[in-house]
Length: 167
Image (cartoon, rainbow, N blue to C red; front, side):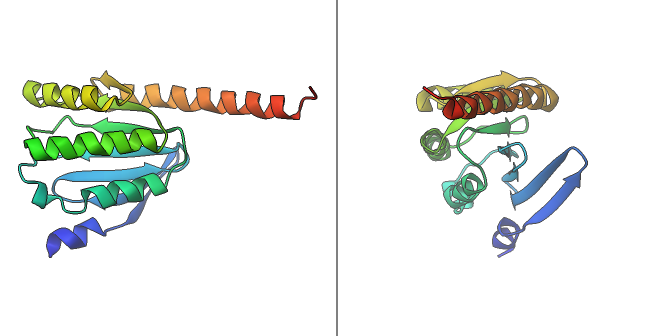
């Protein structure tokens, strides 16, 4: 029962520079969103050996996606991730394919400290086709995604300007 309670926990963290909303925080993973950046933050803690340990994983991702708009970014912090079971890895691959369908623009992944887990993560990304760039730190990943958000804002401004210009 405790697992279900932590999965429905929702709170707001305020920082002068950002507004992260905690959607899910349990013993296996955390999912936050920042609507001001159109970003999802995902972190894995340890190994998930049994798919039954994360019964709400798909619903949690659907909830996160409902909080962002097309061309959203994801900062995936997998530093503490251990090896995942084959079924969990396949589920992660399916989630990544779903994110692509829903309009993800880029993932900045903070690499797993465990080399084998990092290799597993790379294989999942390769199979799903997820647009991912790896980084050594959260700060590097955040800065990279912030540049992408600025680039999309500039493109949107150009599109709007072109829409109001006569042909």
